[in-house]
Length: 194
Image (cartoon, rainbow, N blue to C red; front, top):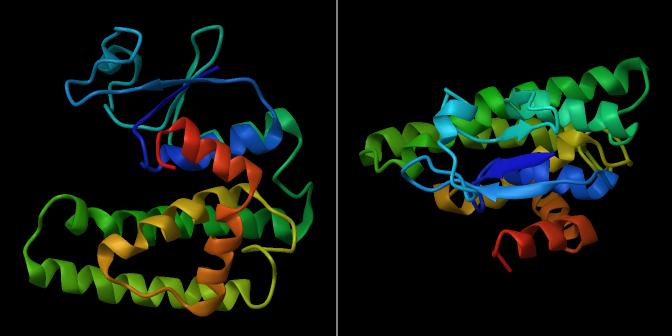
């Protein structure tokens, strides 16, 4: 499998998951002109033009973080509870982070004016408070076992300093613990971030 990525972008979640479950993969970076590291036109691979994008050995393409993370979990039989409410809480957390947190970072990446950034900060503070309540005193977001939601959580927490929003204590502690995990250390190293 090929994982198309930008260093430190949200594709880091999928990268961590691939390492954590032990599936073989090759990282291929994308440049600003939408060319892949191996010389292809990325827009022919993924017309949406953004990452993450996962290319299977047979040429099948998957996009969208939630979908790729679920695929990785299904292929490996890891990082997703088999059934019951924790499985659905994992998907719920992924959807919430994707819709309420990820999109709220846009003003900080694209040079929006300060009033837009302030509205985004307010939304982020509320969203992080909700995640902190959901996590409570568990080791990870939905349980004491790591799930695909935690792979995405790592990225949304890692990016928080760019917004100027302080993380609730349990989320900051989770981020600090995850930074010491072998899969996270390896992913950060492979993306040139350590």
